[in-house]
Length: 230
Image 1 (spheres, one colour):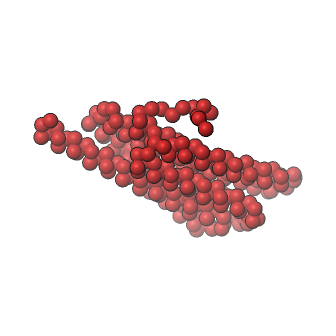
Image 2 (spheres, rainbow, N blue to C red):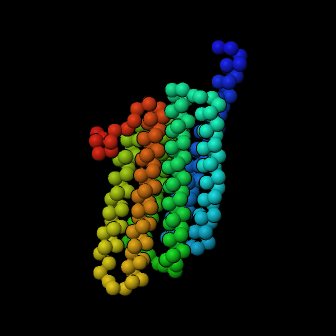
Image 3 (cartoon, rainbow, N blue to C red):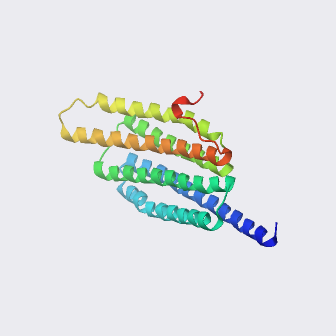
């Protein structure tokens, strides 16, 4: 390999390293949004909810920067094999992270819609656990990417069962108290159901990130989720 080729290869690897660092930063911002948005909702804290909404601009800006870097690498370097999988996987992963952050913006906006609201201990406990589970799964997905660990995909799929159970618990709780003609209570129940759905989708995004990491490392697409081996 010539000196020019060596320099080009080093430059490309440096660019990949920068991409990896930026994705980790994006994931960190997303997990911070999950924690902050959940606490704002639980506390009916409008100021904290507004910060979650405003901080989403930083997440969007970083997402677009990462995407632009990926497009430049694809156009200028024309990577092959493993390198191509990394760049393509990064594009998919940052999309999943951005969507998770957007879902927390929705939770923050629900804080405004329901204000002033108070949650009884059971409901508060369910939503708090959903926020913690969403944050945990996103962090596991981040670790999988940072460590190039495809085994995390299986762990995330198993962890997602916990979120499904929490979602079912929330819906059962809401339905148990839905026997009312009070329009305000009905609208509140709908908003709470949507909040639960947002957390469930964040967990799904984390599972998808794990699958993308698996493809990035092994080149193999994951099996259908309903066909996965227990």
